[in-house]
Image (cartoon, rainbow, N blue to C red; front, side, top):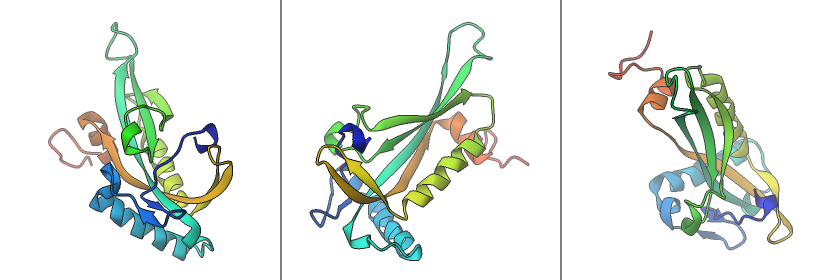
Length: 167
């Protein structure tokens, strides 16, 4: 995304040595994420911690009907990510990408686990190209939260309608 000209808003911006407090960046969860990201970089012996900006992502999933006939058989599942948008652009869609799509009735645990593991690796720090500034930049991204409505949440957590764990 950064290579396509979007400007991320980091919770901690290493270039300005400041912490953003706007919107989700100002939450306790974002503060804890910065601490966790630094710990992950230290644990992986990452050498560029001081030059690394730290941001967040959130995953969300939903289901929708492909068409109105045979509703039981045509529900589609979508898994997407939103990557540290500026507070003013959070709902524009420029910072959201679809990661996976499939049939709603299928088990998506492996897909969800795959992307959760990818984010764990991204917490250790990596380099990106920023087209707006024409520079390379060190960043770390961590998972702030996963959003899902009741049916998706129950499937992810493997619980029945009443919240009882499935055997």
